[in-house]
Length: 391
Image (cartoon, rainbow, N blue to C red; front, side, top):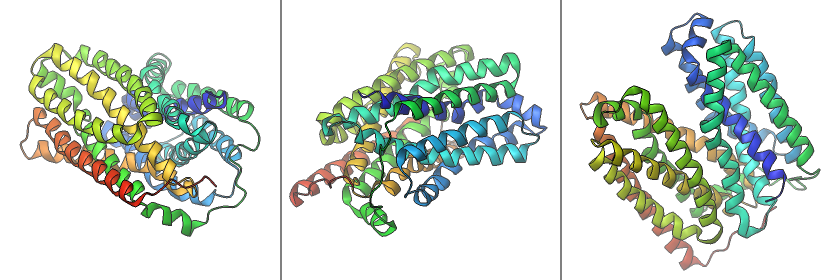
């Protein structure tokens, strides 16, 4: 893989860490800013909302900038934002800063995906997407625990100073490793064309599959700790180790999905959701038994991220002639899906359903995803449509 992809991976690692590390130091942040822990939780949901809403808007506004200039600029915003968070005087300012960083986050992943697949041959696109996505999964395995440990020992503000240092390194890597002229835009596609490509069935069907994937993943994962403790009977001290194992499974899944995206994109989009539906049924069946449950969750996590890679590769391939808006909708779509999944899980629990029942939502979602993928593939074959050439 080209060396510039490592810069894209490292920046993805930085953005992923800052999104999720706040959860590890949330009680300290709440105490330091003088708010309750539930109120401090808006620092998490506000960040997700910033990605979902701000990413597409800022992507459109910056569509005439060269991609390298934009990527470096986004990392400068990231770095300055971390420093500002480290000295934030109150909750309101902290929330505003987190949302501003989230805007940069939402733009970054869309642009990075477009740049990444432009750096490699068409048969390597899946692995390029996988490498960038691996920055997110590795942030959960390394960045978040390390940032949480720093906050525990030296205070939560030290976590953000560490993130600032990480931003400086990521900015330097992007400036030095990504060639000049990478992703330069000679003729912007224009807003009308950016919107038009969203009407291609390959795009909107993938967005439906993406939503189903988020229901499959985050309805159970949002409540994974009580599920493991109350249904499986694990001690609370073992839950972080299960989550670490899930992170390892996710990282493996990203690269498996990348390999499949490069050589068997549509077969993987049709087969993997079906396998995941079976896997969720297995999770429901074995949830009272610790060893089978932990093993099933590891496989489930790997398949989740293996599905995510071909979804994104397909969207990027079919919007190559007007990629900006579509690429920004990828992180937006994931975050919308996460919000819907968490809310649906809460509604089920408040209605009297048990934690054990949550994976069954994923079974239904994967049935829908499989049917949509098969229909999309059939439609494409009958129309003999070909992916557009990049701008």
